[in-house]
Length: 409
Image (cartoon, rainbow, N blue to C red):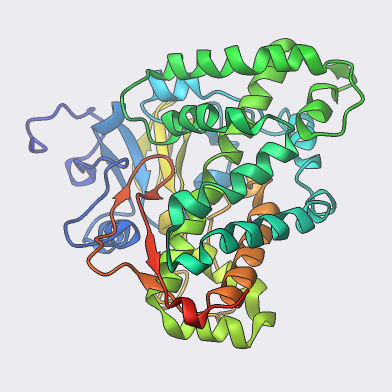
């Protein structure tokens, strides 16, 4: 690894703020995904640092700063949210994510309508029926790979129903979404964007003018400031929905079930007192955040004692907010009785995730139905759980085992 002296550093970046660190590969040997991020936060570092990786960018390490960067659009613009800025950032300027208030609000409203609590309530029965069906499909086998047999099934199938897209397209769309959030090098960012547009543009054209009630049709045929969406706006809005719907909840569920498999007391607590599930899910969301996004500097400014320049990127890992001991006492522990939980797992400010209610609902139903049917389970003996970093962190595989005799239909 090159030293600080060997890597070119902008003149305005103090040497004590220099950190040779890749946010997409945060792992520390012997530590899991979240413990690796926590190790960075607990190191003897300033609250804001600069790294030459991924095009060079600033990064905040404390919860209070994560929240500020994500919500202070007057200083930190949503115009670019990913690094490297000139590749990933340029390709991912989607709606409404890349817009600042007040311009983003009309587009955000179109997207949010399909994910509002009343809309989610309409698919709760479907979520529960699918959860039961998936669990019953492997319950009597005594084993499953949770990531592929469940986590990549339930939220994606529900999402594909909400947007009324054929299930046969799921694998193709999931692969494209992963190339944005955890690229494997098989496609460049412009290629991913082009393939998404090639898929969605004919669907937009076919649904224009239709009085359909699926989420995409309602967005496509909605209005912004009294006018119809342009083709480019409709395409950007739909791609944003697809990427968000096909990835984040999938990975969150895997982290949740990994924790449950390792903590019998948590399983017993939620089985015996299911009424605590809403609070428990908020605690799990605080403890297992996934996303690392950023903002673009609107202008030169002094921030936390350093000079930031217009156009620079500043990354705000949501992971570091909920795990900050300055925000939540004993943050690495999961406490279902914790109150006044502070985190940015679903974002902060005007760009708080519109799918948060759907994510919480799916997680609640999954835990209810799983613990009712498979009350005791563990990670398959000998399996070493591994993780992948990226814009959205993930569990690579989660093989679970249980005694079939302890389960019930």
